[in-house]
Image (cartoon, rainbow, N blue to C red; front, top):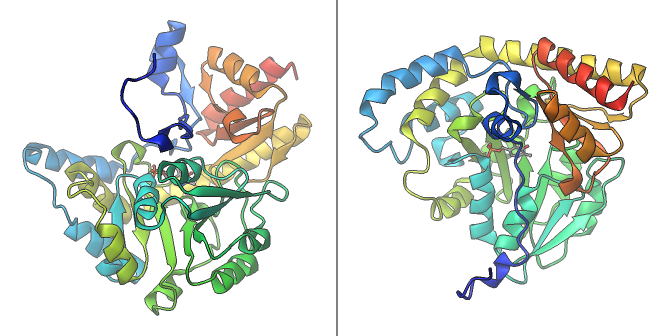
Length: 366
Ligand SMILES: *Cc1c(COP(=O)(O)O)cnc(C)c1O
């Protein structure tokens, strides 16, 4: 039924984000116990949250009748110290998805152009359309961002350029030279958003923080998250790093208490749990190698990944997704990313990876 309200016309074109399916939802649908399922669909940490984060949240529970610190003083202090920046360089979001929306509020309106790559993270187009801006999608090269072509797509009307490195859903990584050239050559009227959601999985990430410390790049926004390597996706916490002027602009569009008290406490503890991070990274590297070797042996095409998931070509992606689901393995079909023959599999524990592979072999009769 159509609504009698005259809705905001930007809603008409707005794509709907299709998240990885929650275990409980799939279990309900198939009439099976939740314990029968594993989820390798949303690039979550298969080792769970840091135990230190769980303990820190326990301590906060009795004070949940109080509003959280709206400025997250201690968390910003700690993050700033870790990163070698000032708290004035930081903004926190309810997931880094919210930071993307802040960028939209600050920069996008009808007439504005936003440059993204084919196979980009789905939230960039959604936010672009939400603000009635024009999406300029640059064809990918070998599944990866074509950064020179993205630069060439910039016009005087371009307001924002989004780059995720590594990229989701492809897992591709741009070279240091390419990234530095992009940062160097992007015109100063364009906000360059470097989405570093998977940065902590890299052995030698390109460090763009010096450009922010020195104040050289007032048009650069880095985004990171506690959802991936930190294993706190359920708490919704991400952060942006930028020049104090840009941060001040983004702060104006932020809701006062967007970071809840549990998230603040958990993040403070998780930042110190280097052992958990190390184990997560090791598990991920081993899992990636496992899938790559097995896919090679099975002659399944895949995109080499620098992140905590891997894209594999399975034929009818939706069918394979459905069949795997019946076997208790939830993955991510890629039709909404214009990759209908592909499946994205998040790296799990060794046991989960084995189970996923066994399911895949069964479904594909390999
Ligand atoms: C997962 C992901 C995020 C982080 O999302 P949160 O809102 O922080 O959970 C951001 N960008 C990309 C590319 C991602 O894959």
